[in-house]
Image (cartoon, rainbow, N blue to C red; front, side, top):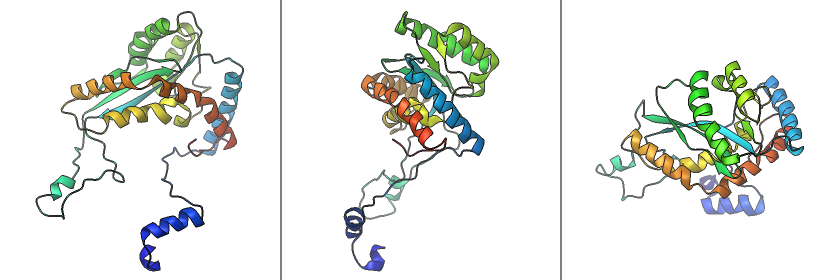
Length: 261
């Protein structure tokens, strides 16, 4: 556009911003939703909002999993390296290599407005079926952490509808061992936009550990534990406090995706 109008790119940006009142926006990656999923998201968001506003979801504990890789994450738009004019000897400095099967670690964690669970590190190759999830995560980590953190205070557990989460045996365990929980039939489908870990906290952790390449999985694990402990609780609280606003955003969008708030 600048070349066609014979003016600078800066002038183009100023015209767009000051005279036309528009600004550049990045595309957001969102889950594609079917009409049925939109209907379910709307229905379940309304019910969760009712429960939350009536005080029936005290001390919400949000949980989620995420995978981190040993390789450095490269942002192709924003990451830059400043070099002299291109020559054969400096071209290699501009190449970001990737292996086809990088070493990786899956992590699980739970957060609440006034605390966080230990970070659970799961090596590649471990199959997270319902039995593993119940024994190693719910029974092994969530239960003792919640007992220590909440004491006699009531609390409510949230998880998404992954197969290991929605399995009958897992739902029965939660029914027996957790004061309150959001069942797999209550949580909106395809809704990472309602989980504070997904829409905020994982991004903070990734911004700290994803900017470098690690020598080994063990080095990555050390960095994950270190940076997890350093995330300010105020950030986690703010993310958790945004939950109700996001339920309302789903309702305004009639169950469809909504612009980030």
